[in-house]
Image 1 (tube, rainbow, N blue to C red):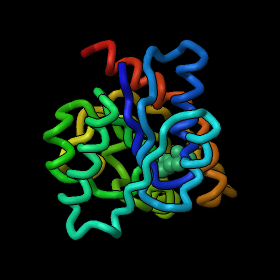
Image 2 (cartoon, rainbow, N blue to C red):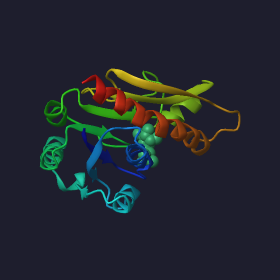
Image 3 (cartoon, helix red, strand yellow):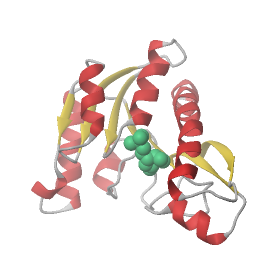
Image 4 (cartoon, protein in one colour):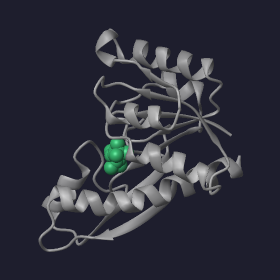
Length: 188
Ligand code: GRF
């Protein structure tokens, strides 16, 4: 299965997918990484893995739809079948969702449906819950919504900060993202 990855930041989840493919745990290829921040470390990882990386800066487009249309053109150019949002910090529109209906996967650092949006970990800490986690799901138009593929729970410790909790959640993300992709593409 030919994957396209969308990442905005560090790209550790992108790299976990690349590693799972290399280890034979995920039967797929990464055709292209698309990133939207010029200084995203994900681009450095792509170079190290010899994976084509394309910068599409959302600031260069006049609407979310125009930006998504360029993403779709790029995905199609690289023959992408499934799209993985691995730390993609942009709201996506119907332009992307209609082009890849039920074939877009997102990872979110909470146990959905709790704590949607960009500050999921801060929200979990502020709420006083004792269990946090991460969710891999199929992307629908509403943000952080759509059928859940896999989840993992992570205890919140008394001294946790956003950083320490995020680090422990990421260990689980790196495990369940490749596993959930494998599940989704096999079920197709
Ligand atoms: C992950 O925690 C993901 O859940 C969230 O953004 C973070 C991306 O991390 N949406 P990385 O860029 O994969 O290291």
